Image (cartoon, rainbow, N blue to C red; front, side):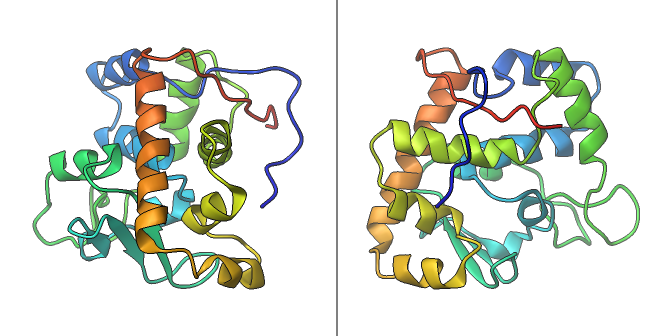
Amino acid sequence: MRLGKPPSRSRPLTPGVREFSKAESEGENPHAVNVIRLLIFTGCRKSEILSLEWSHVDSDMGYLRLPTSKTGEKDVPVGGGAPALELLASLPRYEGSEYVFPAATGEGQYVGLPKVWYRIRKSAGLSDVRLHDLRHSFARFGVAGGDSLPVIGAILGHSDAATTQRYAHLADHVKRAAANRISGRIAAAMEGKTADVVELSRKA
């Protein structure tokens, strides 16, 4: 799995709890704030979380069962009692919609994320960080915590189908335990409980 070239300087992982609380109190769309949180905790792609349906959430086994993704059908391990599952359990369900984050009108999914992200990242002093960089940061936290690249690749799903197949033999409990550790470290860092930082790309 390619983690990319190191950027010119290290940055804090992502907007922390204070920035999210501020965003919510100032009227930012709660769907957008919670989508960003799930991106941070899971390493998923933006499209995977925006299109997430309640039927995809397997809380008992600690997985997001995605029927479609960039690499096809994909099971995302999130651990047991991990921050991602705790967040999902706290969200309301909207009558008439299968989506975890439905559109305000109509039957589609929420689509207003980019504008909210631009405002939140500016408030957090991360104005040059992209949403996709949160996926990179998840991988870097895994590496920093001692998890192997094959395990991290199995959690994230690799764009190379052959590489993904090579990781498929890893036991479920190994992937779920790693996902739980990584998301827990990220949550602790967001709350200021550790000194961890992650190198984020400075691409526009």
